[in-house]
Length: 327
Image (cartoon, rainbow, N blue to C red; front, side, top):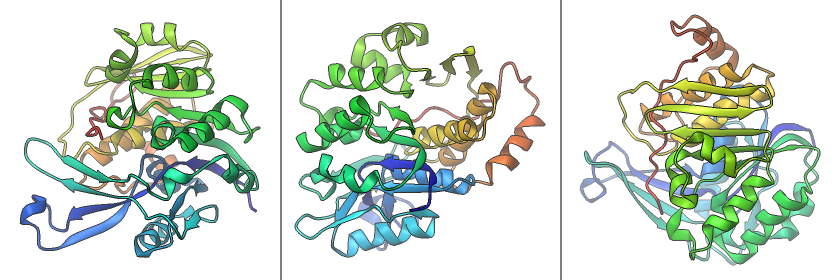
């Protein structure tokens, strides 16, 4: 198989949203589209100009077809997706409201929940520079937890760098999330985490206390609500103060931030530019009803940000961090 820049691993569901906005109960027509933290990253990075592939499983059903064909049309390679004839494709519904978007999940017993270490044999066949996985996968089932542990702790997909987004979803866990997610973070090369979710999980109070707890990864990026994003890297500590934007829907903003930052990493950009790319991508998603807002190539965004008014030492932050409804 041809090498790709990024391989993402995780569950993608069919997202059901009212076609013309508004509440679910008042809608007459609905839109079906793929929705999943990892495939969001893959699709957004494809829009930024990178080659990406998604490794996962969906049912051998029409909803699985929706996901596979939609992601293929977005430029994501789906050759590693396994079709499961015994289990269904998961579904979730978004219910937009002025007070915030509610999300309803129907994922128990899904095809993706049956992913296992046996799938690694096929995934190893796709050379790639960077692997991206999240804490969501570890919470889907015992098989998925063992798969995530194998990917992170044993690193069968080397020499690719490993990116891990904590993505704590409390309803998917049985009370042991803190220890498990900490161990996964500690053994990754790159870690994304919200300051607020780190506080919930581990009792940390600020970005530096998160770094004191997660001290092994070469790159730790802590998103601190409307305040700032802080990255701890081999070159030092970098901060990007936040600026509010008009928010349409918060779901997917964290995935977009990761896509922008990882794009900058793959392109060899400096740390401030990586943060700025992350914030730019997230701002586009926050201002859109879709998890996958349109993005120009990363090189064009970098040129735009180069002309922006804030000095490079501070960076440009144009988003409020992801307040994704928890499962």
